Length: 134
Image 1 (tube, rainbow, N blue to C red):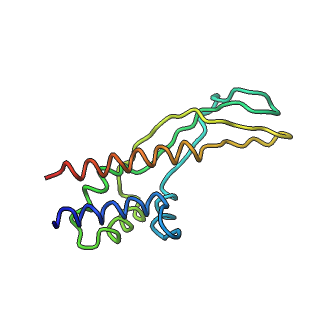
Image 2 (image 1 turned 90 degrees about the vertical axis):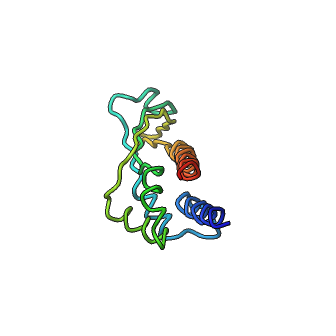
């Protein structure tokens, strides 16, 4: 029973990190601030006005390692927030091709969908890693 309750707690924190729930939380905002998106130079294709694609490097916390590290804390959410705030955690990097639009010389890199997809994938990986842990 305790294992199931602990899993529910961990799952709820994962969802908070993803921004799910009735309202945005400090943990969600803190988590989002730890995700960096950087356009890779020379990765753009497409017209000056119109649409195309560009490559971006997305760096985010290694949630599986982070959750294993903080899972045994008495206050899992507070410990997670402390570690995220300190910046003392390992990261993972991904390279994705994302849409880019340009109008009147203003380029907009549309990376939110790629970030959200990777965030979901990594949080699920973290949950699975916690469930597999002894």
